[in-house]
Image 1 (cartoon, rainbow, N blue to C red):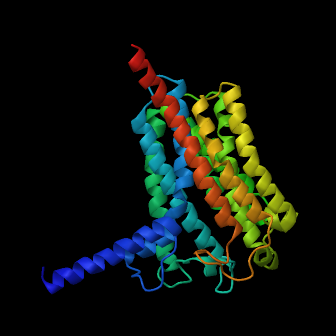
Image 2: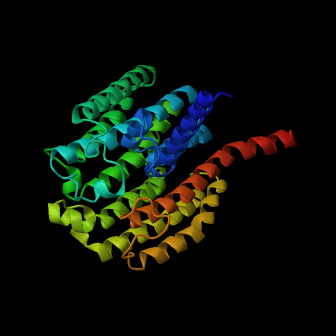
Image 3: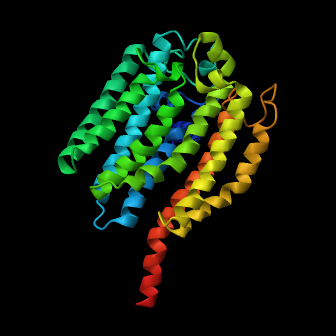
Length: 349
């Protein structure tokens, strides 16, 4: 292999390693190349997309378990649209918070990870263009699924876009009035999960709305954890997130309570016959919950610990750590509810 090709391979390997790091942590270590792909991956923050994928997957898997003729093509398209919407939401938050003077060099947002505008990697005009492009693609998906499935697709998508934009955009700025956390609960629960159920099954029973709540709660704990970490900075800027309104101690207790309620609701879903017993696999995340609860009952470290890539964020990282396992096991249980009965029936036939 020539020196040129060797250097090219090495350069691509370094870029690929950087992209993988961004997908895992939404950060890029110093010294790794910030190429065009890397800067846009950093802008959309793909490390948190798994929460959206889980919410959508729950809706599709519940539909497959309770209806015949699930349309997996529509499901896949809806799930892709949800991920695009999440990417757009992350960019919208950065754009409007920068424009309104919330995101500045001294603010927490610029400390824990890359900010597309403040870093100088992306201009405000470029970021706005990317937001419009992604939303145009999402609009095309919405129109197609509305034609194929029905008008409720417009309702689910429209409400999701409304909360996404006005989470930070004036005049509502939901985050500034203690309503951002509720907005996340609604989006990652009834809108994503029930909406995907509808697209997959073509109908939506009322119980699906309730079944969307358990995982939406652990998504909400991630946001609450982030707002606890930013409490002092948000209070100084007049941003009244729920932790700013409630105070740190009450917010820490609230997050622990919501994490625990997830397991209580999983048990209730099984005992009420809403879903099969395989979702009890989520209980295997209880040891991780105990670990996270211990962290929440200890003071935040005064200095950056080792392996804390998003420092000075702390409580959000542990909430996400719990979310990954609890949500993953819940989704795995829903998959097994579909697969194992089919396998057993095949052996019994």
